[in-house]
Image (tube, rainbow, N blue to C red; front, side, top):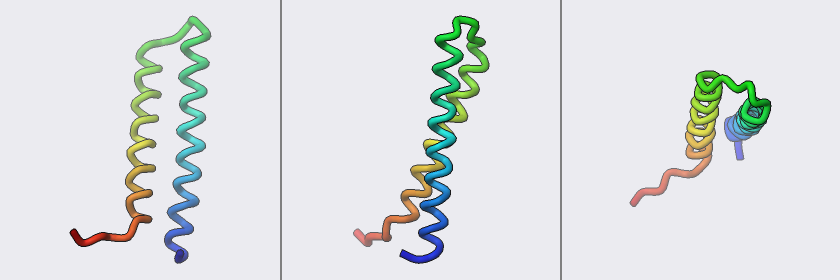
Length: 67
């Protein structure tokens, strides 16, 4: 594992924390009963973008396999 891989792993970890935080924020809004559906939709979209970014970074860690 090289330095770049360690940077990628660190970034993945940061994104996972942000993803969890968004999940907690969405749950809190839903259970508060005063939820704004537009705000929840925006948070869910951010969460999905983070998930996509995590997947993209994880793909960078995998070696290229020639089929």
